[in-house]
Image 1 (cartoon, rainbow, N blue to C red):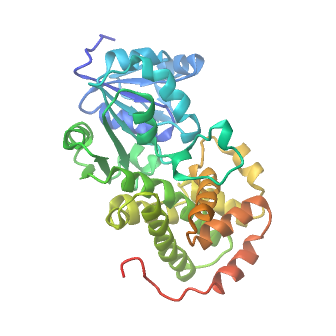
Image 2 (image 1 turned 180 degrees about the vertical axis):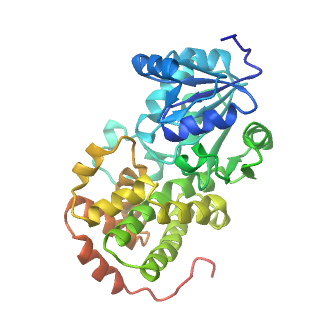
Length: 348
């Protein structure tokens, strides 16, 4: 494979299902360098041309050397689980310059509590979105995120889809649109970076709840109730953490919420479904090939909600279910008796 210069080679970090799908989309217009952390897995993908059960395009080059991503690519798409994101950025940081552009596709939160604050209530200072981690650890200024109803399996099947590229910089949005937009993949733009990131993070909580509703054998009415109340809860949390309400009413908010709350292709939906069928959280996690971000997000948001006195009944209930303190059946009865007084009060 011929070597490409940094001006026309696009980097992708992470060969999971969504990272692979993003790499294939990018490969329609650009040569791509895909970073795979494990050298043995990288060689396997290089030989088989298969990654996460997806056939990768011929112009996707594989590397297990993260320095190559920084040294050869100006535009980079990190798509790794949030639990690994900080460590990955720390490894990448020495190879980054202010001219780089990073557009991440990770829908999770980073928790970094200093030793002297361990045991104290969790605050926003200890909880960061992925764009904030990038800004904290690297010299990169032009940062963005990719968020929306993007079920990787459907994208891999070349079904129509859309996403949002969010950034404080119009240039980043333009770059994302230029590289990703196609006849089957629409790209919208937003300047509310934190709001769009939080949409992608928080909808995973509600998706677990929706999966539990489905696992209980309940119908569309119950699921609609859960989704609509979940949207209100997302906005309460999002506003408290620095997001704008408008972000939650668009593609990355309600659009992604609908996709992940109604599809068994969603990992988070699957977690809730299997919990309702009687499996333990540990059993579910150990059997899943990829991370369901909502599991960790529930724990983080529950702690933050207590610190900031935010009303999050769905999150709190799911946290109790995951800890074994409440059954799925009991949670349904609890939720139906919860004293909601107004349907929508965040716009008053």
